[in-house]
Image (tube, rainbow, N blue to C red; front, top):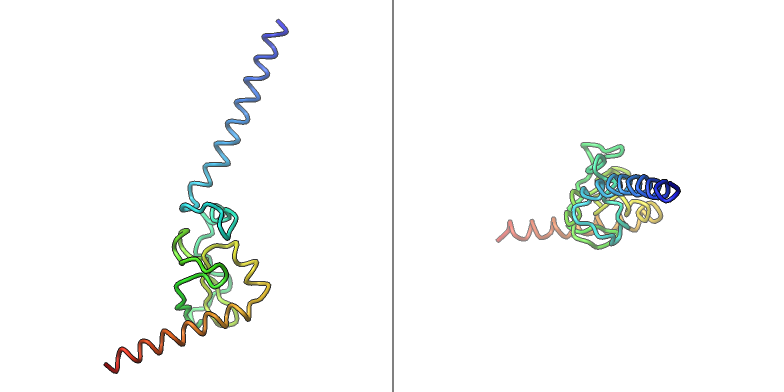
Length: 130
């Protein structure tokens, strides 16, 4: 009888662990292939939060940068970019995890975005003249 109780207790614990693991890993399927990288797997937390605009303005200066200014990763590789507005400038990051680094030195990253925007505008102007 004691052995039977031990097996039942073990089975109940295994079922609980299995149910918890299934629930935890179910949310990872929304991570769009993020293997950690710059975001430490945080892309999984973006399922309901993707493309969130925190205080976004329709009058913001568009971000024409094709890579994340924080990590350098190509935008869209881990799903939709995390987009928000910072002081009138649209900012696109590869994931919400990069926002912490952006917040540490926002001026540095906005400068990168604006430099890329100027280069894109120069290229457009040069192509229009030809």
